[in-house]
Image (tube, rainbow over all chains, first blue to last red; front, side):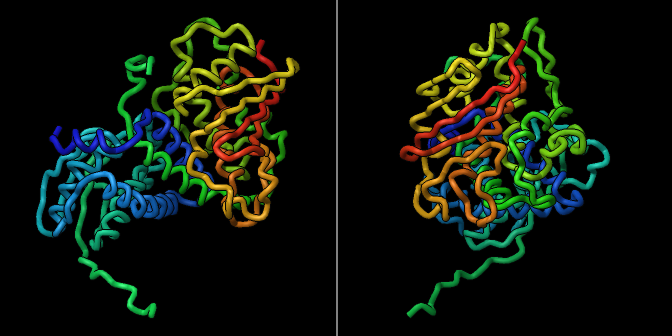
Length: 180
Length: 238
């Protein structure tokens, strides 16, 4: 664990046993599957919810850590891997490949998929799609538009959980000039 | 605090409470404030008895050996559980709470001796379960000895950042909401009642797993972080 990681888990505020979180997420996914027509719709919904969470989570993150401004995609990715995951989910993440516009990140553990097995008919379901949304929403708040995909998923037989992130563009900050 | 390291694969990591809070907020956004998709029924209290007949059979936790459902517990065929007859998608929050309650109730009780009677189970709910989930015990437990229990929590954790103002929408004074009665849906606003539907389901789930069928409703008549849950037992454990 990096030293940043240690700091992160201590400043993150109240900790809870992740079982409650895991099981609640499971209940949510199950309900979405019942309510929405197809697993693809569920993916979209999860992504949307994730984005909303990410938008708020980034505030919490910036408030609690002393992160300096991430100047580029690489720095942002490293911050997420070193501090973000540790702080919020209590897990370690490692950046395995990194370029200016793309990176891959491996999670050593993923509390969201504890106790989960996917039946075959749910193949199209991307169970952890919430995570993608969270990262996308969070980075959008710091002026980066990214695309996040789950490239390896233990629920689908892979060994590790891996996220693939791609930078689409830097968003210029827009100030609300019009309110005079 | 005292229960760490118990269970084999049981308690693993911790995560930030923020994560759970934000997830719950999103769930409430999606399912609260309005009758959910599908049938626009306001589920009646009777659903509590029928919902999830397919879930684990009620067991009084005797015998020590408990059936555990470690893997696949959540994802076992979405069709078969969750939406029992009438329970349906009508009150998503409550039934999600119920599901989580069943699972947590089982996990938290697996290492303890069997329960003597209903009161014992309710005490477990107020002390052990409450401490695990809300990190404090219920402050006050009242009963009429005829199957009604009132659990009073003076600082209910999930209401700690709720405000009584606009959130309550048009029903400022009537914040009482029944677990199964669907609250006052339809205004498209999040109400305190919505915040409490998940925990109502949670409580009902725990009791159900331990062999008691009950109807749970919540009430925040007094000042806000305080909250009381009324548990009406319909069928006792043997």
